Image 1 (cartoon, rainbow over the protein chains, first blue to last red):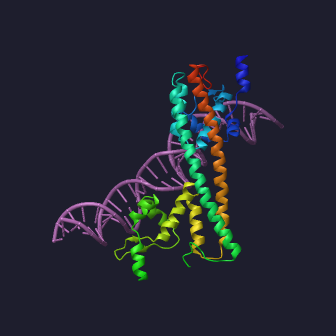
Image 2: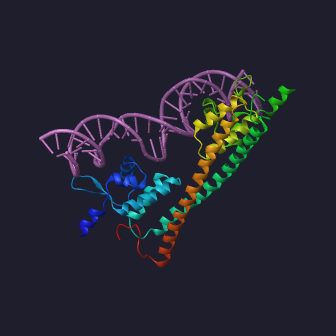
Image 3: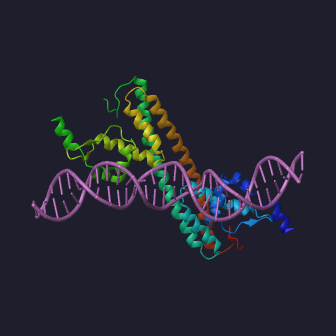
Length: 140
Length: 140
DNA sequence: ACTTGATCTAGACCTCGCTCTAGATCGTAG
DNA sequence: CTACGATCTAGAGCGAGGTCTAGATCAAGT
C-alpha cells in the first residue's frame, strides 16, 4: 500500500525535468553535487524515481538559483536539511543572507533600469527630432 | 591648446579602473573585444590615455553588464555607435529589448524574494515554537 | 523477437567573463 | 644612474554551471 502509493506517485527523470524546467542532465548534475536532500530512489531497473518531495525541493532550488544563489550555498542548505532538526538557526541565516542579496540585486537592477529608460528616451527623442546631436557619437 | 586640453584631461588605465570599478585587466579585455566606441589614444610611450568620453561610455557599459547584458550585445551596441548616425532605431531596439529583460528579471527576483521571505518565516516560527515539524525534513 | 525511445554511467567538453602570467618597457622619484 | 611601480602584449588559465557523448540497458508497443 505504502509501496504502491510511493510507486504511483513517483516520477521519472523526464517528468521531473518537465515539471521543474531543469534538463535531465542538470537533474543528474544536481544529484551528483549533493543538492538533493535524500538519495533518489531507483526502480528495479535502476531508473531514478522522484517523489513529490523531491520535486518540491527542486522547485525551491530553481527559485534560489534563479535569484543567484550559488550551487555551493544550495549544497550547504541541503546538507543542513539532511542533518535533520537542530540547525534551523543556520538555515535561517543562510536564507536571510540570500534575501538581503536579492534585495540589493533588485535595487541595483532598478537603478540600471532607470539609466536604460533614460537612454531609450534620448534615442526616441533623437529619432523624433530627426537626427539632432549624437551624444556618444565619435563622428560628432 | 586642443592637444593640451586632451592631454590634461586624459586618464591612465589605472585611473579609469578606479573610476569605473573595472580592473585594468577587464579594461584591456573590453578594448580587445571591441566594446569601446573609438580606438583608445596612446601616449608617446604607448600607454593608453582615456578621455572622459571613454569613461562615460564605460560607466554605461558597467551598468548594462550589471543588469545582465551579455558582452556580445555590448559589442553590437558599440558597433552601432561607431558606425555613426543613421541607426538610432536599432540602438533603441537593442536597449529597449534589454530593458524588458531587466523588468522580467526584477519581477522574477521579487517572486523569489517572497518565496524566500515565506521560507524564512517558516524557520523563524519553527525556532520560536521550539522544533515543531520539519517541513522538508526527510527524518520526519 | 524487434524496434524505438527513455534512461543509465563516467567523464570529456563548452561558454562566459574575466584573471593572471611572463617578460619587456615606460616614467618618475631619489 | 638606479629603483621601482605602472603599463605594455600575447596568450594561458580559471571558476561557475551546466551540456554533451559514448556505449550500454531498460521498457513498451507491434
